[in-house]
Length: 202
Image 1: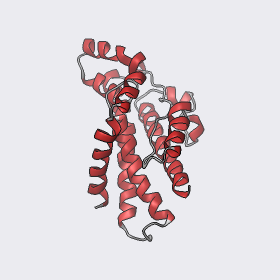
Image 2 (image 1 turned 90 degrees about the horizontal axis):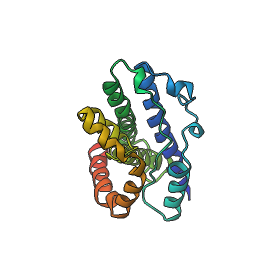
Image 3 (image 1 turned 90 degrees about the vertical axis):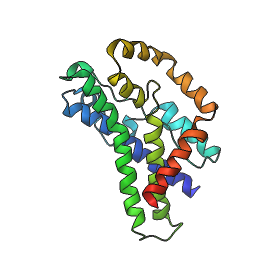
């Protein structure tokens, strides 16, 4: 149960950093929507999604999943407030996964210092920090609305094609559930995360 609590703590830190990065980059690019909605905050309750932040992680803990993952409520962004809407959405969407990668590198750097006994609480915290940061970063790069990967792809597609592609948004959650059921997490995400973890931690 101790490791489950550590997982929850790390998960909350990672999703807050992810969403805060989205809102901060949007703010720096001229869109105050996230700030006005109270989303430029370290308070995890401001970012919590009933399914992605509470229900799914709880189910994974009950099922004794080796990794906890999920999502938060998307930070509100108004592309019309950007001087270049497509570039603004691209940078804002990239900010979340980039924050996850930066956290993974930071956790890995502290882990590699070897200051903590293997299996100790700080050792587990840092290792989980690397893994969960990478899981959320990779997961959010999946190009299915409303995940960040879909906004990134839409920002680089020709405008007409991007509009047609984003029509998938009402069905994105169902598509994502179907892909997870078919083994997306075990066959794609986890192997990639294991490889990245070995690269960072050694």
